[in-house]
Length: 44
Image (cartoon, rainbow, N blue to C red; front, side, top):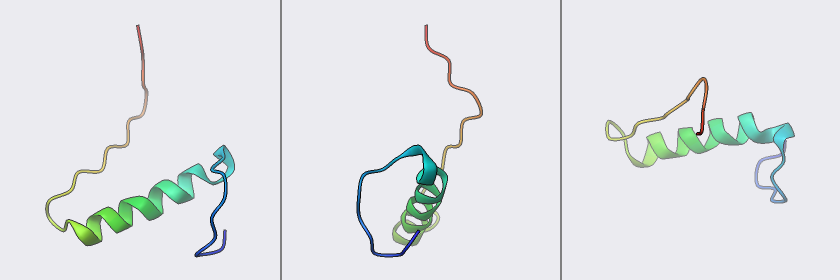
């Protein structure tokens, strides 16, 4: 993945993109952010 590129999001890069987004959130909102990483999501 190249920094600064844009394109459609697919599952191949989901984890990397989520991690980069989490880092940006923590930069903008230090000590005020909560990163949720659910292990299992169940819907009824």
